[in-house]
Length: 217
Image 1 (cartoon, rainbow, N blue to C red):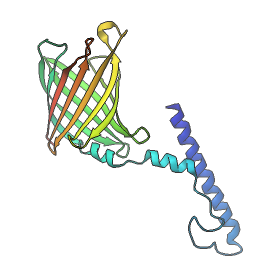
Image 2 (cartoon, one colour; image 1 turned 30 degrees about the vertical axis):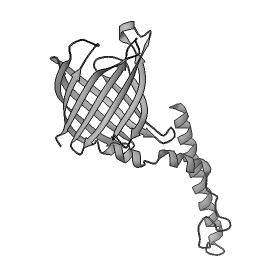
Image 3 (tube, rainbow, N blue to C red; image 1 turned 60 degrees about the vertical axis):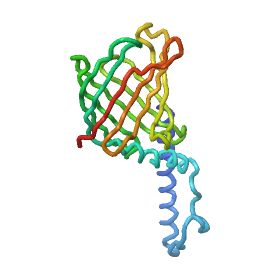
Image 4 (spheres, rainbow, N blue to C red; image 1 turned 180 degrees about the vertical axis):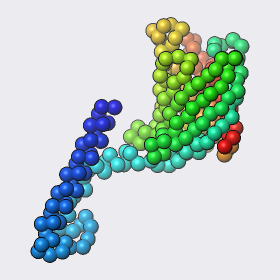
């Protein structure tokens, strides 16, 4: 975070100095004759700033951000939660809202539902990191104080985003990490799905959470 802010500040400062310098040069030359027409190839024109070009390339939304934009809207949500392998599942109903933020660079999604008579609230962010060339995510909810982070890729054949990560396991007091695999399913314009798989101590995956979405607005 600190490094990103320093990069951004340096890029903006460099752009400001370049613009100021260009303006001074033009003012000084205006007394003698009008500046020659042309672009970067004209003699005396400032050379492109590699640092600024690299920063802009990393910051510009692309096709993968357009993919995430398909999630935008309000959705009715059906959930099925399984706390441990072999234990009974808890089903619930709720709603979710997905919206593009920060110029379409991220999708923020908020969830509210009822799980076994208990109110559930969750908040997540989805994005695509141009430098890593991976989808990234952050999730937090009222069922804990931990922050879950994942990253993964998109499969055009199955229209799914699969991301993986780890989080501190509350059952061991945070002494061990539990692996998870999330799958976002783009089923249609008005239908979407989500699965969260967890890896147990035996190395086997089990389906911990399943969400079905129907677009309402």
